[in-house]
Length: 140
Image (spheres, rainbow, N blue to C red):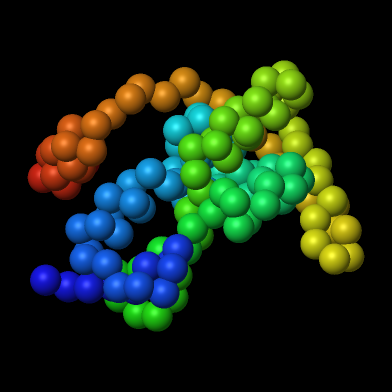
């Protein structure tokens, strides 16, 4: 059994426990996909999600967890479902803007984003894996 250090505390937990905890958190790309926030090219717009999180000033200690990547010493930051709800509320209050402008960073540099919205079908992980394996076998 593989044991990994937990980001929440300095104890080692079985890999299954970490994977169960990790499934309750989402990275910026997953949040963009779940909320239907896409770039002009049709890809989930993780940069907009990160900018909205920064704009809302959500406390990273309260709403974030760091998880180790499968290979290497790097970590990925994932956010709780409360962050997902806060972003959705912000989008509703601003009438789902197609052009979003934020001042970011220490220099308060203005960043402009163009966004398209899509309604998402809820797809279980099993169906998604089946669809990916099916798409991989088809020659386009």
